[in-house]
Amino acid sequence: MPSDAERAWEALLRTHARLVPIFDREVQRGTGLPLTWYDVLLELNSAGGRMTMGQLAERVVLSRTRVSRLVDELARAGLVAREANPDDGRSAFAVITDDGRRRFREAAPIYLDAIDRELGGPLSRDELRALTEMLEKLAGARAAHRD
Amino acid sequence: MPSDAERAWEALLRTHARLVPIFDREVQRGTGLPLTWYDVLLELNSAGGRMTMGQLAERVVLSRTRVSRLVDELARAGLVAREANPDDGRSAFAVITDDGRRRFREAAPIYLDAIDRELGGPLSRDELRALTEMLEKLAGARAAHRD
DNA sequence: ATCAAATGAGTGCGCGTGCACGCAAATGAG
DNA sequence: CTCATTTGCGTGCACGCGCACTCATTTGAT
Image 1 (tube, rainbow over the protein chains, first blue to last red):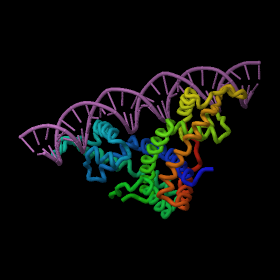
Image 2 (cartoon, rainbow over the protein chains, first blue to last red; image 1 turned 90 degrees about the horizontal axis):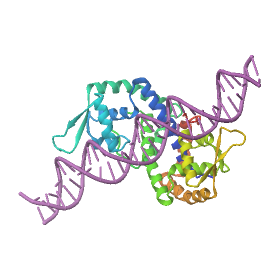
Image 3 (tube, chains in turn green, red, blue, orange; image 1 turned 60 degrees about the vertical axis):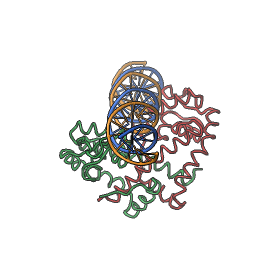
């Protein structure tokens, strides 16, 4: 007989496995953007449009390596641009372009609607807040989000 | 300004991203078993030791395709055996071996300890139950994995 | 000023994964 | 019985992803 912690973990696994493909499919269907692209654009957009690879990797739930390649793809698509950091020759900035902002604003409502439908549907506001609070404890005090 | 649902989703993503590698590393360090192997053995063990690929794929959070290859690896390691289904020539059984059971029982406490530590530590019993209940709502109608 | 250590980033490589496809067996309508 | 359809599996292939490694730059101790 599974413990409470086990049950919670399995439920988390199943929830993750169910929701990620749903969101990915929905965003991609609506805008052609992979979910990972969206995430990068989101962070870039909400951080003034300019971040180093390392900062991005901290924000996005991906390895720094992956982010580096992701930025390459996004740059090839013209949604972000690579820029040198004048104060540190090692680091590189990823800067969101106007086109990137446009595509992001286009994709945002689709993603957000899907999230609200899948999470906000079954759960009340208070439940969502409680859920977030617990999950953040489990995630191990990560830096808070900025608007 | 993120909605409550957004914050919850991001927290879930971060929690998943943090915990999976931890558990995987810990189990692998302690027993040499990849986490996916453990999951297969777990389901097999708790289902009388014999399942078809399709049944396994429904249980484990993986595609049927992946399960098929996983069983191959486990069979090569001697932890499960492939067996023909006398009633249906298309389907194949995966049967856990004695050695597989032994390895599973060996790995179980390590995995469970890690879960209890990471989930049961920060969260109380009641919180865990509430968390599970909410997550199960989100996991929804346990939709079988698409392939 | 010097140089060893630390830091930020890019690359080679291999693994895990799912999709499209193919195949054989079972099913069912006629 | 016949044969088209469905079902359960396995395989070729491509992609996403992270680790180990390398390179260039910066930092800091002497």
